[in-house]
Length: 154
Image (cartoon, rainbow, N blue to C red; front, side, top):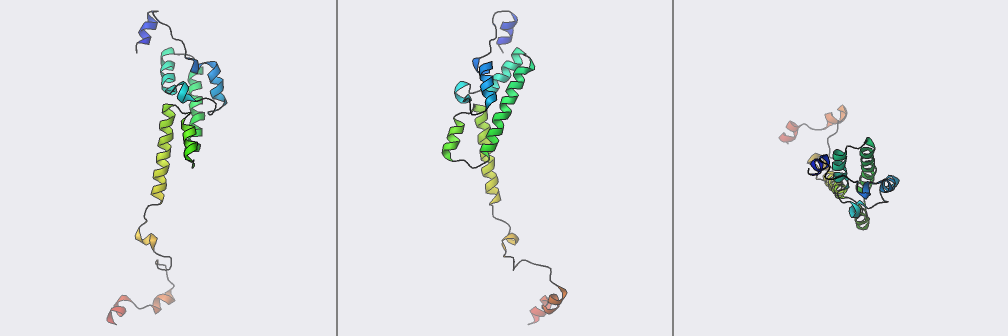
């Protein structure tokens, strides 16, 4: 909030941080595993978004942010929804920015909730063995079976 007025009065200038420079753009475009955003820029997307708003650069910078997010997000979803060992989770989380860690944890929690929902106790009718569940019986079998009234008389 303070940078815009200072830049407008020529009291300051905006310089793009190194993590958003061409060198890191090439690394991030190569793959999500190449750069650890947690160590370099824990709030990579948030700061990048603010810089993009303030600097009003060409769409190249915003395209870079979107492309980086998509490629890393795809990896988070594919790895987060599949079963991973504790070591693999720690290794992956060591490379994620704060925003990516929140997404990853949200995905892991939703997967656990979905799995527990699938294993919930089913209604009584669903637990009956197949032989005990009601089936449509042919007319011949129904005729041989005593009705409730006949059974009550006995």
